Length: 235
Image 1 (cartoon, rainbow, N blue to C red):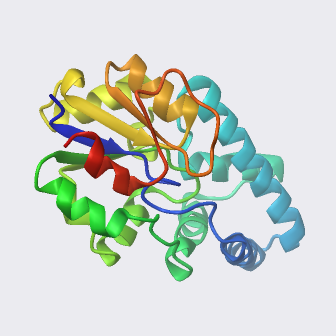
Image 2 (image 1 turned 180 degrees about the vertical axis):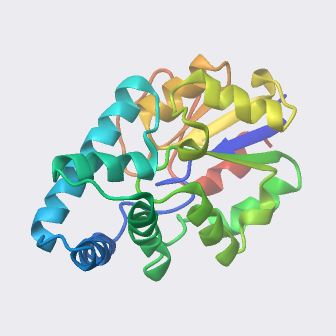
Image 3 (image 1 turned 60 degrees about the horizontal axis):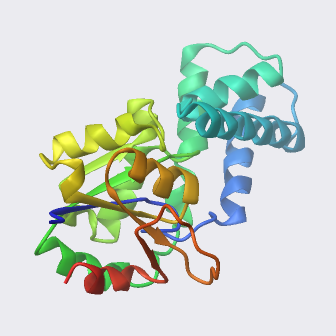
């Protein structure tokens, strides 16, 4: 019997990808800080270094199930630009790099706002998120702003625990904290590898959120087009 549902964040609770303008805000802020620190760098050069850093971090996350975190991405970018800066400047760069999402916040995914309160009446809810640029501390602020934070008993962000989906450890850690066994839990997400394969490897029921997809993922226990369909699955 299912007693808990864990949610992926991007393209499950919230729509992605993030607005292109946010990248420009980040790079302008980071470039300005580096220029103020005495480095003669253009936003184009800084942008290329941070794009490469994000790609490297994403590859590590996918291949090794480990999250280098936004601070790790900043280190990669500084190495690429051959810059050595002190901790004070690194902390300023971190704030500039990670805080811009709230200036142009993403929309919640279709059906989330009306479905969560109904699910919360019957199930323990949690979030298991592979973060990218935006850390968990900022994503929590977004959820509070949209008034969905309180529906969840526990939230896990990969930048805070180092594990990343599909690592079984991040699923196990979540279930331990909501005091639920894997057989009693279902995970919903849009990614066939990190969400579906990861949940199945952890012994959970796997729900693939796949709006517009016509092919099947054999590992998934359920294929749904909208978060709203969760109300029908377990009833």
